[in-house]
Length: 155
Image 1: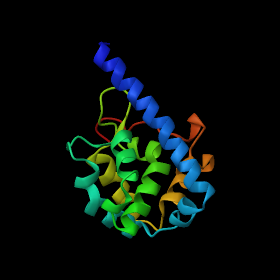
Image 2: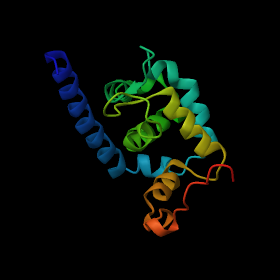
Image 3: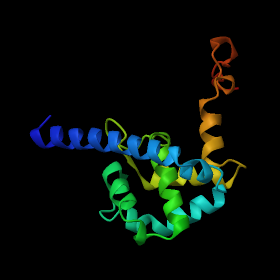
């Protein structure tokens, strides 16, 4: 790992801590809690509308880019800014929707956003309910016995 890589990793960790703090503050005043039930179709539309402002370097939305956006509320409509609150809260969930980065996932890529859109547009999920569903241990199989063997060749 080079010095530049170390600095990037440190910057990402600092941004991650700052994002957690912001989400905590927004949760304490109820902003994110109200936004949690925002319709999935609306979230997708607003994310698509504001994507170029959130990702000016076209390499995915990093925590630092999201923090910069949150510091400039006048650059966004109130609804778009609400989506920024949601992206902050669910950032770690969204970045893991697709394995499209070498090493650790650190940004919301277009692929992550596309998978998010599929979840939200083709289900009745909000980001909050999607998060609960993904974390629900009852939807995961824990027994190897429930996994069927692969089909035999020629069958």
